[in-house]
Length: 332
Image (cartoon, rainbow, N blue to C red; front, side, top):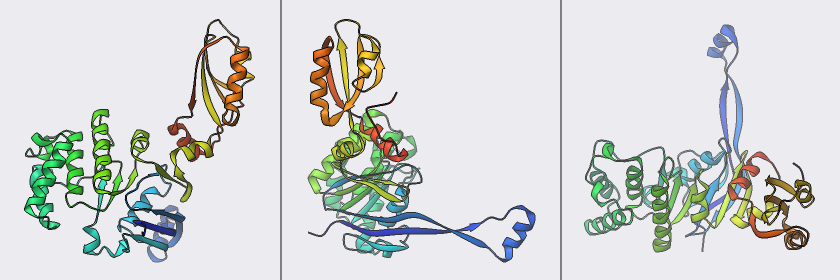
């Protein structure tokens, strides 16, 4: 089976005019302009199988948004191979546009002064959705998002969370095969975030919708994505399962210890980097390859009454990947 999204050596170079200093430089610029080239995406390669939810992560300026814009046909690539559902996105053919959707958390496609239901009606006509399918889909989607009572109120009267749910319904009313989600839970409270994640997971399991998710909320990624692609400085820094990211970018695990009597910090530091300590409790970073042996040694030498062994939080590892930091057991 061909992948839903195919990307090979994808590159995007922006040509920008160079501003000259001073009044004289500005006048010269009117007649002879100088340009510089900025390579925003540098040879990105990945495939996404049909039905997979992939987290596409990167810091601001990493090339993440530029890549998403190329995948959705908003801008063209400078070079490389790119296909979505077998189509070239930049051609923006009608039959292809009917099979994809894009949701952006900071932008809306529905009309501010109209009820969401009226906006859905317009989209029904644009996508040639039958009346029976329209009623069934809107009804089931509104129920899943607990939005039945809000559909006939003007969009401007709804809360941010309610508007975001309406945008999701608008995006999937034609049952797209590929759904691009750019910060779909941005600015929402935790209850609304959870409800949207549950909705997206149900959509994927029920219809096999392929999803590409960008989010700064790692809870979105942890709950929805088994695979993540990390882009940094225009290049792929990691592509694989979430636990693979932990193994590749962190050599430590955190051991939380509670003691029956007070211990000295120096007795803990010989085992690894101590991040928290108060005499009766300590959190120490230990080498994950020797975690079992190290834990047994600590139990034999210190008055431990309780312990917990945890991985480094995925949020911290992502930040380390972006900054080029490696988590080690030694050091302050």
